[in-house]
View 1 (tube, rainbow, N blue to C red):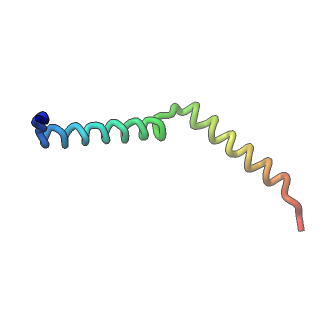
View 2: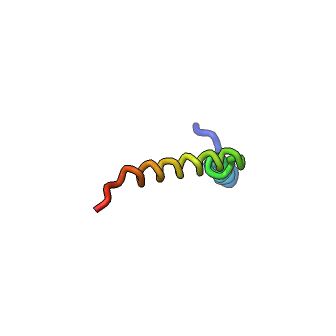
View 3: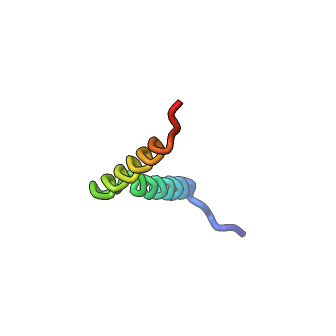
Length: 58
């Protein structure tokens, strides 16, 4: 015979798991320091400058 399942507890556990996954995604997306953001912005600017310098003029 199978075990009895409390649907309320199962629903809350599933919601807790999805909340943890969402929190982990937000930490990866928004959890950067000011220095890390500055470095990423500088690298993006460098790539733009490199690509603009490689363009041919008409």
